[in-house]
Structures are given as C-alpha cells and as structure tokens.
Length: 218
Image 1 (cartoon, one colour):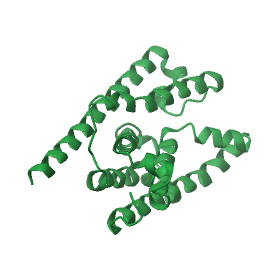
Image 2 (cartoon, one colour):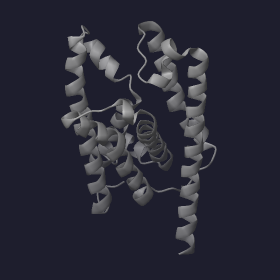
Image 3 (cartoon, rainbow, N blue to C red):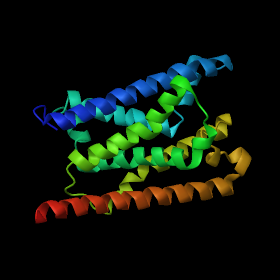
C-alpha cells in the first residue's frame, strides 16, 4: 500500500492499529501486576503473556497495520502488503476471535478496562481486520495450496505451548492442558483446531476467488 493510497483504507489501518495497541497495553497493565503478585519476575510475567495466541496474533496485526501505514515502501511494508501474508494474518485473527467467542467466553467474566481490552482483542480487532481484508486487500495469486503454508503458525504455536507446559506446568488454554486432559485428548483437540484452521483458510481462498471473478464480470 503506497503512501498516496485512498484515505479510507489508511484510516481503517490506523483504527485497527490504535485499538490493537491500546488493548495489548491495557492487557499487560492489568495482568503483569497480578503475575508479579504471584511471585514471578517481570521477565517471567512478560514471557507468560506472550504464551497466549491472542497476544501474539494481536501484536502481529498491530505491527502489520503500523508498518503498512507508516512504512509501506520499506522491506517489511512490502512483505506485509503481499496478498498471501495479509490473508494469513486474517486467518489467524479470525481464529482468535472464533476460539474465544465459541470456546472461552464463559470462562472470562471480566469488567471495566479488562472487559474493554478483552472484547477489543477478541472481537473488535478480528472483525475490523476481516473487513479490511474483504474491502481493500488485493486477492490475486491466492491458491488452495497456500493454506498448507499458513498452518505453520498454529503448528509452531502448539509446539511452543507443549514445550512451555512440559517445563513449567503452564498451559495457556484449558483445551491444551495436558495435566488435566492427558496427551491423547490434547492431541485430539489440537488436530480438530488445525482442521478448523485449514477449512477456514480454504474458505478465505474461495472468497478471494469469488471476489476476483465478480470484479472481472462487473
């Protein structure tokens, strides 16, 4: 995206980045003191926060939007402007939103700033970024086989979560908790989630193809 791009997509990028960075900062400001009170060091508390897919993916969205807005012609800007990269980010943040709202919402009865941050990370940012992808991201060149490459991110996250959990006993999400569920059930949960990633990835490719064809026929 060039600096002289239309105002609307740049304004949307600004809004997404603003909300994402605010929500991430708010989440850290709430959670870090609570973790410190449990006896963790500051470094351990920050490391714990980055154990959540929600935080990692919202940081990815915030960085991508910020780079596209401020440095679109830089090497990172050209990377984040690729249709495949932006579609992969869309996939990841949609999964964050769906996972929370389908599986975890009842486990998080937050109020005040914590509720605002939580809703921003899991609902507002995913919806806004999906709208940005649908409305402004070029969709040429996307292929079904790209979906397999996009699975590297959730696979890497799962491996990291298992390694961290095995060494520290901390599992970021109930469905990944080996201590409570055992490895067989956790692996089954992971397989179902990975299948969900893949199906949604294929759906995004199909939507991209449909929108390309619609533009050709209009």
